[in-house]
Amino acid sequence: MSAKLEDVRRAAQKSLAEMTDEEDTAITEAANADPDAQPVDSLMRKKRGRPFATETGL
Image (cartoon, rainbow, N blue to C red):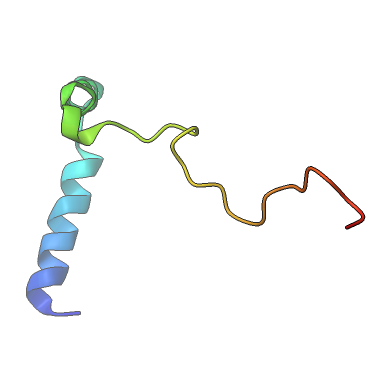
């Protein structure tokens, strides 16, 4: 990893460690209010694997 990238990573980790509960709440509320950044709920997630068979013994 480059030195510059490592410096940025350290600064981000330090900033996260110093975040207050109020800041975290404000960021979460802002993200939830943004229509382009809505969380994906379980209904929208693609289910993996084979679908269950409705008939068996074919």
